[in-house]
Length: 592
Image: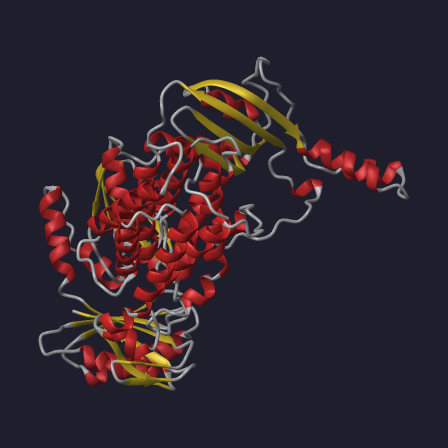
């Protein structure tokens, strides 16, 4: 194939094939993480980020123009960004689309400019860019793109092939830039993810046959494959679809508010918006509520409402040829009471309505207004209870085992009725997503201010909120909370998923590892011994408090025995033991 331009339809195809290739390689990329921990998640985070955008692109149809596709790529990846690698990928896509969206067709010269803008945007998003990472690979690709453009290359296939070849070459050199990569015997996982996106995009350009459908399982973590439901399992009876012809573009807050409302009245929600239209799909027991809310944003068209329970009965009737009508009627009569069907244009009565779970949710009292609220991230019911007991308004479930997206953080902030919301990420891999949420909120003139206190561990987050003083100016509190982070030493105990060498320490698959703020502190075959040795290396004479949070795989008696052992070794310290309930990590320990 030899051509010198890419049109909107081809760009869409190339982006979707790039996303699919990354999704297919995500587990391999996860295994490239330097630390051989069971929650290595670079591939997962990058995949969830790009699939969020791919879902929006895939919903646009075959006739979308370049501007609409670029908006879907940019907004979808920004909202879906997870983890540092996902945020950086979203910024690369954001910068790339800033250039491309201005053109109906893209040639080599425009692609080179887009690569340059992508790298510039991504580097600006990272406070302390580190070479030997995805940023370095992206920069190498951009430099090669510029070189080819200047040399007069005008064939897209040749251009893409040479850029990918050089990006692969830069990737192979990342271990020489970061000693930790060399010692672990891996290339940078984020850089590998980017290369796989580029390779997949080229496959799409060359016409490789790839299934471009994007399923909910690929976008939503933990989603289960659906099966044909029984009628009593259909919680929301009406499949409702429509397009809103927007009177003006929705800002981020309006999008989140609209989506939250749809979630409160139903499920199976798909909502995609550009500057002119908003496409909505929702399963609900009262389609009128969705329609009434949508009218706040513009006029409606292409409305379609299907009664899924009735469709199920008809299917049952046609499929059950050998069964008696009495048997079918018995199943129907045993089903839940149905609400009436309303068609577009009907007057929708507000009284005499069957109360549903969504009605009850809408009737729940609103959180009292406050000047300052808190959102935090953690995994484990015990840790969540600790944060709530300290005054946190909303706990996002996640952390080491699943990094929340930028949209998850924005959604959580919207649920807190406060003028200023302080976000505690409690994981270094979530800080960038939290910062991106704050920037997006500010850019869209939200009535809430988001402030991120960059806690890297759960104990840091706990210490930060303990240092919050009510009736003190927000700026002073944030400064004090941030300063308090430096007083906490943290260690976490998990197991190794592969053989490796880190900091000259030999690690075998199945070994228990104690990981401190600066790296591996202890390795061994017994959880308690590794935890004790890790803590011993964390301690110094000025530390007074040791806190131990035990996970969901640790028995309380085992944790109590470890506590006694620690108290005996460090009699000058208070030793607190609390149930954290966190998965993957047997113990989280802090000393301060």
